[in-house]
Length: 156
Image 1 (cartoon, one colour):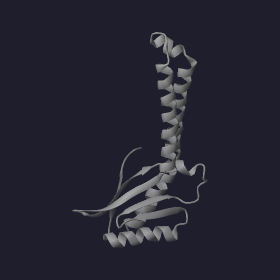
Image 2 (image 1 turned 180 degrees about the vertical axis):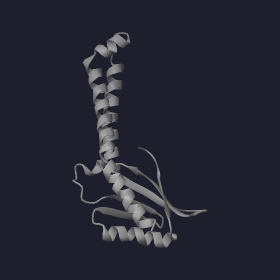
Image 3 (image 1 turned 90 degrees about the horizontal axis):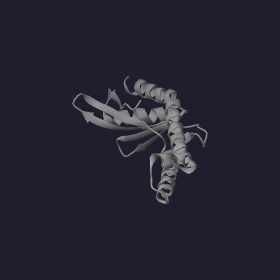
Image 4 (image 1 turned 90 degrees about the vertical axis):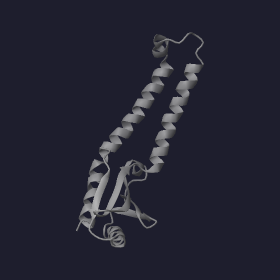
């Protein structure tokens, strides 16, 4: 699930960049962003704006190794979705800390679990984590398609 993707490129770095540009021109489904001479981001182009943050983005870099050029990278969520997720979890954890520090009675596991505000915050954090997990699992077909497009373009 969290494996890094390494693709052996048969050509030099400039030719590999040209082939990546060809993916962008010939395939209308994916958007390619080249950063500098060796970094590339590939994502799905025609995604719904609300759900596009949870679609996988491939971030890779062309690296010269002893056995030739390789495209090494990984998949991640869109940074906007990551920021939103961190904000939701962070706000909930801050509320949880505020609730725990406002207790007047001595803290014990029984008093903590009996407070409905604490159980709500814990359930909310768990729900957010489950949403991210299911979004990651739901993006598997797109990750496989991006990997197939990269392998078919660069390994030929």
